[in-house]
Length: 376
Ligand SMILES: NC(=O)c1ccc[n+]([C@@H]2O[C@H](COP(=O)([O-])OP(=O)(O)OC[C@H]3O[C@@H](n4cnc5c(N)ncnc54)[C@H](O)[C@@H]3O)[C@@H](O)[C@H]2O)c1
Image 1: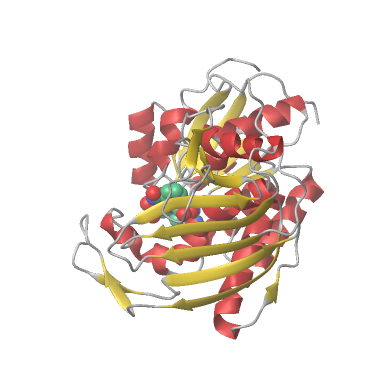
Image 2: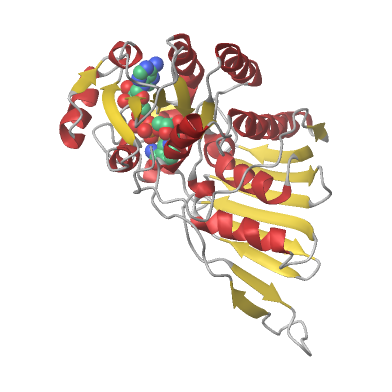
């Protein structure tokens, strides 16, 4: 095959709620050309085509058959991630897929193998961890700003995505729930900050058997809850640190984006891993402190990008052209799914559960990465 040069053609399959956040950026990045949009609901694809100036919009096949599309951005619901990604790979396209990579390890592993056999790549959301917040925190740890990391804690609790999503039932189905819907942000950040997960245990519960749609045309209708909506997990990381994480869609009290890494010399407060940027701070013990003394806080200057979703697609495109690894890799997405699945299994078994996969050190974003510079 002749090596392509120049800007990278992109097509999107799945033009629902999150497609706005992606398309807003994908059409502005000079290194990308958004060439076609597809959805099972073709009218939805057509509406997004009109909104973002993408002339070719309709069926998923339109995207798969387009000869100049090199990356298919899969923004379908989790239960469709594997099938749509497999079809894109079969059509000779690289894939960027929303999180989680799939709803089970077998289909996720099959995707990695299909991509490797075809010489194609898979990139997996979230790309928020490529943003300034988490990248700044990673660099602080690498510099030794908190000494040796020993423990992590994360919290994500609120009353659930039906507060804002007009079609929330998939978020309470297999492959979602607070663990699989929000867990990828926290686990991807922790694996970048601390390395791979070795083993986990967890407890979980379901507050209600059914929930109701609150916003949009279907408001008032109810749907079943298939997954735990409240999960408390503990983890051991391969390099030694321990972690405790809480994921809940049952709490009226919203406390999200809490990620703290405690090291031998201080505690690093990381910005929300579901956002591209935010405060990154280090608390250290104050001289003469007692148990009521506030730590001494140091704000870590932010380095990196705050563009919003689509950054991972752009990194994937540039990595393809420059023949370098992309950052949010399929292997990282698989390891995160493996760790989340092990947590899910531990909820059922009550046992300490190994995480079989591992992943190489996640590459850092280059300090000079400018999404709006034409580089290809
Ligand atoms: N909504 C958010 O705030 C948000 C944020 C971050 C990530 N995500 C992730 O983005 C993905 C999509 O979420 P959403 O909120 O946009 O969902 P959505 O239900 O609003 O949209 C999904 C779209 O995919 C289409 N679709 C489903 N199966 C398909 C198939 N087999 N082929 C083609 N099209 C298909 C649907 O018709 C729909 O238009 C999920 O993986 C979700 O976890 C969502």
